[in-house]
Amino acid sequence: MKIKSLADLRKIKDEVQEKIKLRELGENAENHVQIKVAMATCGIAAGAKDSMNYLIAELDSRGIDAIVTQTGCMGFCYAEPTIEVIKPGKEPVIFGFVTREKAKEIIDEYIIKGELIDGVIPVNYKTIEEQ
Amino acid sequence: MTELSLHILDIVQNSIRAEANTIEITINEQISEDRYTIIITDNGSGMDEETLKNAIDPFFTTRTTRKVGIGLSLFKQNAELSGGTMTVESKLGQGTKVSALFGFSHIDRLPLGDMAGTMTLLIGANPKIRFIYNHITQLSDFEFDTNEVLEELGKVPINHPDILKALKEMIEENLDMIEAAK
Image (cartoon, rainbow over all chains, first blue to last red):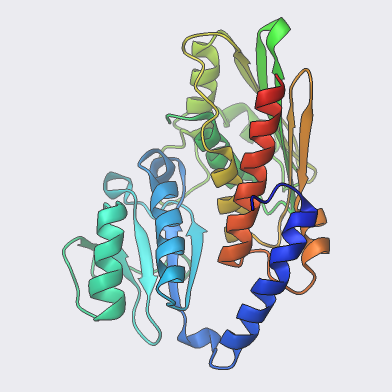
């Protein structure tokens, strides 16, 4: 059934509530992978919206606990779309040219196996808040 | 930008950076007048006169990560390419209003594109901001307000992937309906 109104939304709300209860048992916010997608003019023009939608859907369908948010321009306009990935207890890593294909590779190789792949930009990078 | 919805996503980022907690997007299709307007209003920090004067200048930005800021100027350029115009009104401490007018039937007027995706992306990343989206045509309209959604959801987070998927479907269905009614 297609969801057309707030009344339809109410119906799926209960399903989601059950799901959340099940997950909460083993849940700890610190165990989440944090991903920030650069979403300024440069990022949007380069397709950051598509990459972000893909990341949200893919991480959810694989059951990986992750928080995907937006951030501003990180200054790597030439390498958009760029994303910052922080694995629990690890230093942030920035990836450039994150298309759908690249995003899949990042999930497969870096997030799941912990192996670095091509496309990481500056090693000496600090998050915007730290600068 | 290839879609108007991407411009909207971009301009709303300005409102988010200005710490707005309510952002209203109104799209009005007036086919008989050959007008297509997009108005984005926020209650963020606003701009003083000097900043406002520079806002559309592509070589002006308040960012420190780069020296250009082309979001508004690109939006303006695209409006003008379709025979329209774009204006920015702002008051320090009160908020900002960006109004863009497009020629509805002009060949260079970009299509709206994936507006449902833009809305759910914004909601998902900024669950604490109230988003209001009105889409008006001459025969019908669609009103979406995250406050109403929050009321419906209770304790279930609005940015849960399943909820966002449902919201996207809801917006798509409603936009299809008003499109069919045209």
